[in-house]
Every structure is written in C-alpha cells, then in structure tokens.
View (cartoon, rainbow, N blue to C red):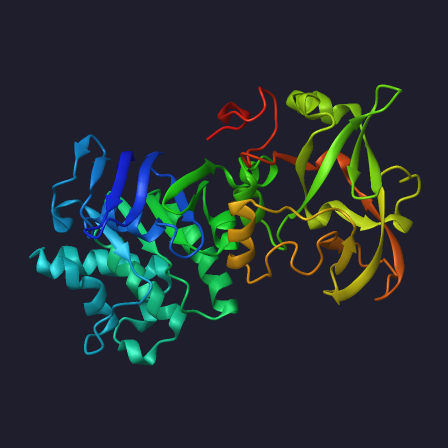
Length: 410
C-alpha cells in the first residue's frame, strides 16, 4: 500500500477554464479520504488527475515515493470504481472480476484464488456464474468493486459509486464500502456530492468549491469548527441557519447578541473559546445556528435570556423529532458569494428575496413539543453552540486577529 501526495495540483483546460487550483492534500497510507462539494467544484477532475485520466496542468502528484505526473494510468497501480458499473454484459460475474488480471496474463490459479477471495469479501460467491443483467444494482456495484479489489492496487479511487442506487441500497452499500475499506486497509479516495456519505465514510473529508479546497478535517471537526461560511452551510442536514447579528457588551461587562429586534445573552465561555469575538463588539457578524441547537423553550425551564420569539410557520413531524420552520426579524445575510452559492445549490431562493427584514430558520425540535403551525412560540437557542463568521471575509471567528486565515485550521 502507499500514501498519496498532491502538491499544488491544478487543472486548466485549453479554453482557459480552471477546474482545480493549488490543491494540496496528503493522504496517509490506508486512509479513507472523501472529496465533497457541489456539482462543478472540481472534485471529479481531481480524482481523474490522480487516476491519470486527466493531464495535470500544474503541481506534482506522488503515489508513495514515486512522482506519477507522466505515468500512464495502467502503470500507476490504482484501481477506479466508476459511477456507472462499467460491467461487460456478456461476461459472468467471475469473468468480469477477473478481466483485468487476464489482461495482465496472470497465472490462472492465482486469478482463481483472487476472484474467490474477493467474492467472499463482497458476498458474491453464489453469484459468480451469473450475468450482470441477473443482478440487482447493489450486487452490480459490488462486482465493480471486486474488479478493483483483485488487482490489489496501492490506491482505490471511487467516483460517486452509489449515485445510481436507491436510498435504501445506498445506505447498505455505504456500510459495505466502509467495512471493506477497513478490512483491506487500502488508501482510498472517494468522490461524492452527498455530504451524508462524506461524513459517514471518510476518516477525513475535503470540502471543495469552485476548484479550491475550503477545508480538510475529520468529519466531526468539519461539523463543529467549519472554516468558513461555505463549509458551515454545506455540511449538515438540514443546513446551518445563517443570519446577520451584532455583538454588544452590556454595562455589567456581559456580552449579548442582537438579532433584529431581539437579543440573547452569551455565556462567558463563548468569549473565552473565541477571543477574537471581543474585537467584533458593535460590529456586524454572520451568526450560524444548527437546527439541533434550537428547541421549544417550553421544554427547557430557566431558558430566559436565550430565547427568540417567533411564529411556527410549518411543522414536519419525523417521529424522532419535529422539523419546525419559523421566521425571526433578524436581517438575512446579503452580498456574500458563499451564501448565494449555497442557496442555489440547495434549491432555495436567494436570501432576502422573501423579506428584506426577516430570516427563515429551520429548527429540529424534541418530538415532545406540542407546537402547531401558526402558533407563537419561544425558541430556546443553545448559545454555547452558536457559530460566528466575519461578514466581509466569510471566515470563522475563533482565536486570533479578525479577518485572517489563522482563525481556522486547514
């Protein structure tokens, strides 16, 4: 096995279109790295450059200790699983899995051994003599994975392998892929636009936007410490709520956050964890709150000072929780490219179009809440879990000077 190093990798097409810019990623030996981002962000182009299917315009690509920029795809010792299964319909499952090994003129006993081992790992032993047309979508995808596994490559590359499956099969195959990768301990680079796949599969997740890497970190760190507005809004379902706010210091030397005509008190721990916030007193900031950090205040006695008054607009009962849509008179975030791109990617109207003076929030309430549509409600905010971003740069505000890249870790 081997690690993978992308140093300043870029891709510029003949017409001048830049698909990937200055991509720097170190994938450790045996690591499962997931590239995620909206359509057209450059994630598949990056994967194809690793595979050798796209010429690298800039930078250096290493597999192990070997520079492979000019090495043909067949000699890079990587195996790729495509979005389409790319199976030969006239060949059996056994022959599809063995196809690459036969091209290498590997001895028949070794081919048989590898195919049977892969079939056992993938649960395909009883299907080896069937044709692809007699298999389900999930079984066909396992055959495609088997064809990659038998090659015993240094690196697995997977390009949205689950996108053609229905929702239930996707969940099952996610589990299978995670188990197989863990058992084989092969360095794996996986591309998807589905952030749920990215968060559940990856040891680390690399978020891309318009050809540029936004943040690379373990899934929980992406969720808890997003580097910027784009990562904050892209990771999480439902998405993080974003609105304009202003931080004030009270006469008692406490901090409060003004959101439209309403205010919430901030505990001292918030400022201690984000010292740079003290430089934003009386300045506008972008405030982010995740749906699960909001709840019906009636279920939280003593929540005074941490609530927003609103009216429930739409209730979506899911059994495990209630998805509640509500509006507050906080100003929406305008003039930020990340916000506008996120809204477009999520199929939402641009912020501020519905109302210039209100923001629609999506909250995940405890199912014990008795809230109904049209009912006035106090919404309890977990103020220790709020996120803050510089309105001009879009960067997360944490511990250093405002507006600098040192405010987060890439």
